[in-house]
Length: 166
Image (cartoon, rainbow, N blue to C red):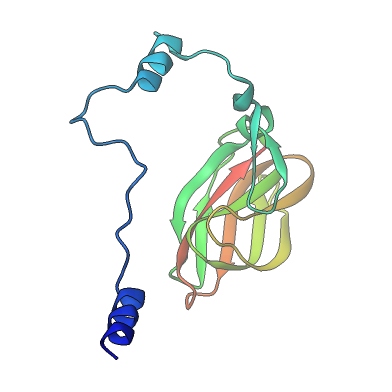
């Protein structure tokens, strides 16, 4: 009976696990850090084939060059009220499309209304929840100057979003 109790105690006791991580060396550079430092140039990093782009959450490949084409119109706008007015006033030139991207939380974007410089207005029903990193592209139907953007959100789902133009 005593041996059975000993076996049960050994089976239920947590096992000691050795870590495979190297010991902390108090801030010294590892050999790999020194190699990366050697690859740096005064203006930044040298060209790397991994700089050509990345994959989004949905598995869609985004080229870095395509991402650079998007000019920020508004960054980190809060979705705490039912609608937000963004006065662009023609700054930034002409845009063919807009990208609405979730930045923080998961704001629900119900509609986006765009008022152009010629005072015409177009409204797009988005009806999407945009968690961080998710985006929605709106085609404007040609290169147009934007006067104002009105974003209608659900204030119950707080979060932040950014709008970019290309």
